[in-house]
Length: 183
Image 1: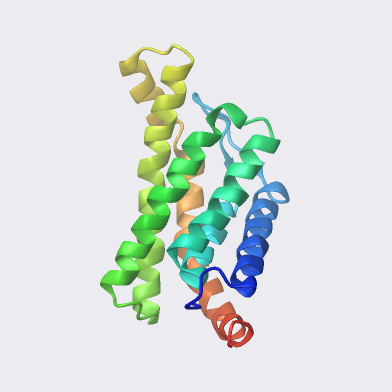
Image 2: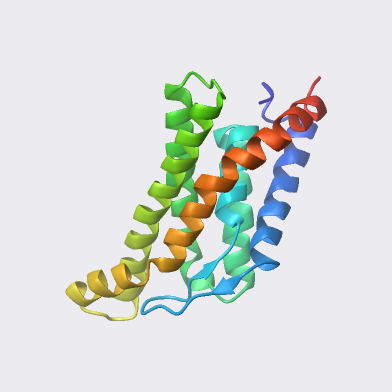
């Protein structure tokens, strides 16, 4: 993680991560039937978690907001893109809180715990988001709660993918990232 969050290098890396996150959703997207929303399996959450670990919370969350929120705006989910932005912020702050708890020690154990926490928090935020989406279209509250719960399979798959892929990709890319990011 670079000290100067506003350096040209950090701005470029933030934009690069935002583009990679967008492409991680756009290229590989597997729709899942659901009672609420139009969920699909993708790697955007995994890549956003990596952005936060590599770029720090501020720039990583910015990259996630641009990548995930930008995808929503440009691909038919604009009405609920603000919910995606909130999810990115909440999950990003959770990742940073857990990583900070470990004093930013990126041991295998700690990164696995961070990844599992990110996946679990994504399930919680997606459930809440689905309730809000259902309420936005006029669904009764009790019905929204049940329908949102029944719409979680794609999120659970994405969360498991995040818990597995983040540690693998983090340790594969860590040395290269920090070599590029050296001053």
